[in-house]
Image (cartoon, rainbow, N blue to C red; front, side):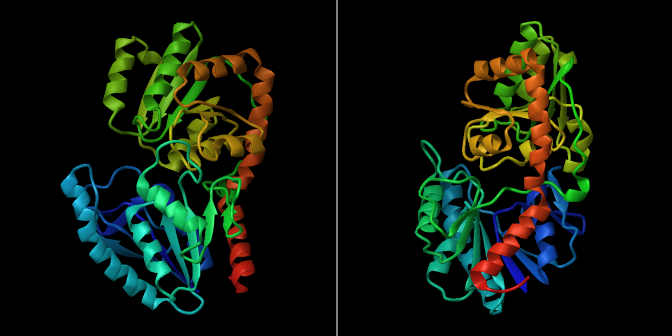
Length: 381
């Protein structure tokens, strides 16, 4: 049995290898355990590969490149329609390769996934269809029209598929299933240990250093805690448009000794840091389920995150962490102080976070996916 994946995952050339966005590459590497072959249609950029990229480790994955499209200018956006001609041709060609028991997997919401959904409405090919909507399934407030359109199509099941989403939602149709977003392996999941909250209190931010992820708000939280005399330290992992600005802000505040900007690090490189952290701080305005939360939770790090998408549901289910308005810097400051004033509460939630990490393993994900496929289509993997 084979799997055809359609996504907008950015890929790049690095020497003789093709590398892609690390978290997606790792997930598809794990999916490769279930299939004879995976063919992945995704975008290939000519730029230098960012440090967040990695090569596939499974030898049964075939990368099928398409040209990038989109951008900020009107001309860039017109380019989407020109690229769609190429996308249409390649997607149709790959769908025609599928056998009767092969599966088509589309990862939404992106430009190429919108085209794939439209194509699936009008074709009978690829009868086994699985759509993963990785964004916020029920956003509050303004959302890109393309995202809203894709959710509408999926709710009505116009592509005739199974849909997996982050979180559980009111009015969720039967074909829309709740899945935890995987980021851990059982082999790397360590034994649960009892941790204690002690000085200096260490906070972690990991992700794109931009406004949407709330990197500036995370730094401001720590600066306010330092200003009130609390012994806190912050490690910032990632890169982005605000990195230089935030490093300059820290320097002007004369708090350099309390901040470390590490740049991008792989999951494996982050692991030694997790065990020393007390809080993972993510005041993000838009998410599906951020993998950094579950990765940190596996090491007993208590999450403080924006109350968006599935984050409140999942953290309540896991009995750990605090969610707040992602723009409420003072709220995050007060949340840290409340844990410091009640270290026993932090210890309980640290233990709960480690227990809950099992939900986010690739093994649990593959088991649930196998059950979904077997139940829906009566075929065995």
